[in-house]
View 1 (cartoon, rainbow, N blue to C red):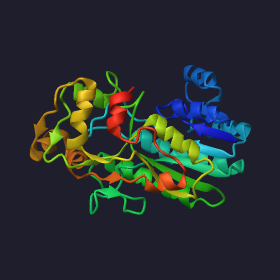
View 2: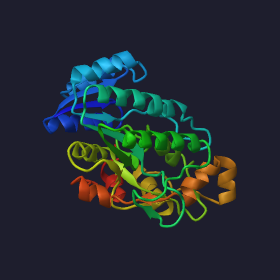
View 3: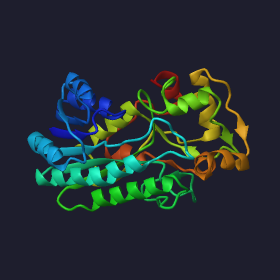
Length: 311
């Protein structure tokens, strides 16, 4: 199958390109920088050096690849994850404008399917602690995540509502593995935990759903020819509260036990979004993805993944 991957040099793009090639697909991957293009070629794919905002260059690259499936892995996240002041503006723009450009190019060449990236931690903090794809998204979270949530949900609606192509949204969990915020020594969250700057907040009840980047890539490969158009949570089998996953993660890093702070102090120091993630956020169920995509994560739990494959 001919597959076009936009954002092929990112944390999920790299394992995705490799797995697609290993599965026998004819793959073209984009990157904005020539040095990263060499990594794509080394993996056995064709590299297209272009920017998602350069409509002419992007359309030319997609036309040359003539893909049956287009996969959107475009992001532009900052290296430092700080819930009080993280700037989602570049990623919001690449999702809205870059994603729209990519969709138009996919339609122009008659691509059959368009698979795009979503967020599994976007569910509203109400009701059950573990959410399915049918549950209400959080459309009005605290800043600075509010604009990011609106941009992502608008992107999802655009993909799912476009006629003439099969749109799938893969709502990925918290990425860990090489090149992610959780990578020991280099990832922003790992550094915070190693310095005891990421505390347990209040009851520590905020839920997280994790996914190793290799497993996220495998689900994406499965989505090329499995599953009806729609939304799929791509997460592991064990959603977990912060109080349950953060101490084992610190232990896997060889770090000291995280500090414990009251909610009022966390709100003062880290902002409302830190409290949202630490106390109120919801996890996600992967039942639909496992049943419909025919996919099972290699690391069924972050417990195994943290021990074996942080990166």
